[in-house]
Amino acid sequence: MRDLTRRDFVKGSVAAGAAAALPLANVRGANEDIRVAVVGIHGQGGGLVREFHDIDGVRVVALCDVDGGALDKRVKEFTDRNEKVTGYGDFRHMLEDKSIDVVAIATPDHWHVPVAAHSVIAGKDVYVEKPLSHTIAEGRLLVNLARKHGRMVQHGTQARSSEDIAEGIEYLRSGKLGKVRMAKAINCQLRGPIGRVADSETPPNVDYDLWLGPAPKRPFNRNRFHYNWHWFWDYGTGDTGNDGVHQIDIARWGLGVELPNAVSCSGGQLLYDDDHQTPDTQIATFEYDDVYLMYEMRLWTPYPLEGHDNGDMFYADKGTMSIGRNGWQVTFKNGKPGPSGPRGSTPHAANFIKAVRSRKASDLNADVEVGHHSATLCHLANIAMRVGRRLRFDPRRERFTADPEANTYLTKKYRKGYELPTL
Image 1 (cartoon, rainbow, N blue to C red):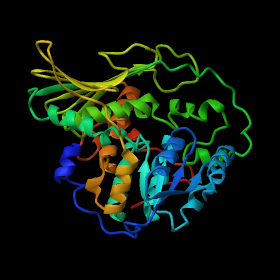
Image 2 (cartoon, rainbow, N blue to C red; image 1 turned 120 degrees about the vertical axis):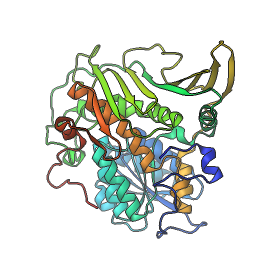
Image 3 (cartoon, one colour; image 1 turned 180 degrees about the vertical axis):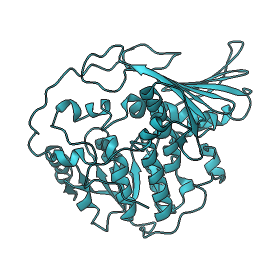
Image 4 (tube, rainbow, N blue to C red; image 1 turned 135 degrees about the horizontal axis):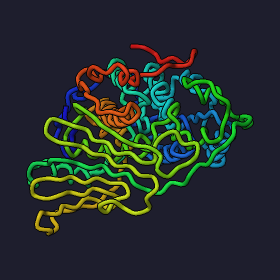
């Protein structure tokens, strides 16, 4: 299945697995408000609260977080505006409210699929932040659950909703630049060190056992809590899943590819000397039938690579295309600039709400399977780095070929009481 541009959607082209309208569900009428709950309201979750709140015909009616202090602060913002919202410390209690239509998820990575899966089974549509999953098997489970229960699931790769970038992708795939031979996804920026921090008592009003959820039981440590959890394998996927997934997704989109036949990756700590487990430097190559997708990540460089801190380069027979924060630009082999366009706005949550009303997965700009493919590339890079060798991959079975050690990373153990639901 090839991913589609925005114009493809407008024209009515559809992709296998996300094509037909999903079964009708109990959703509100065209003139009724869509009722949204947001799980995980610290950081990116706060942005989702504001984004959904500002969409006409949408009401944020529930907030959920294991940090009671953060939850109380966000609830107060609503009550100060004389708006009603219910706060929950446990998403499982929240899902008992049958009036909630949509669950938006901005938890740590290890909670993305567990919350999304239970929400889908409870009859909710889901907007889940990137990366879609914490393991490859989790992602496939969520795709299958969404299809089985007829739910809309949108992945938080917001560039998919930029019509301007979609126009650049359409130009790239039109053949006007000739054959595209390779794409490079670039993620280079300067992040500060996190130091070394001793374990400590859990802060008041924090349900730390629920925060850990399916992860192994450990003492509280503030370096494994708010935001810095990204740099620990039990909860995050490093900056490849945190930020690089955006650039990897655009590279896949431009090349029109899904899952690769092989992956190799090297990485490590070239700058950090602290509590980080995940790398500060990573270089991956994904091999397809006739193109390569490369990924470069450095967290210690305040200077751009080929003009990008976060962006993409496409290399074709007749020139290159650059896609980044400032939009897209073609440069021909003779050095002359070609067509270009701005970055444009990304009304990603609004696109999701459109699909919630239409009940058509083809209305989603980043359907769950699109998100699964991009998250899988992040997982493949991390796995190849951790086992230290080039890995053959079977895209159809979503397993490594003749590599039992690598296949152990396809899933993980879940702490008792926090197991995933099944189909």
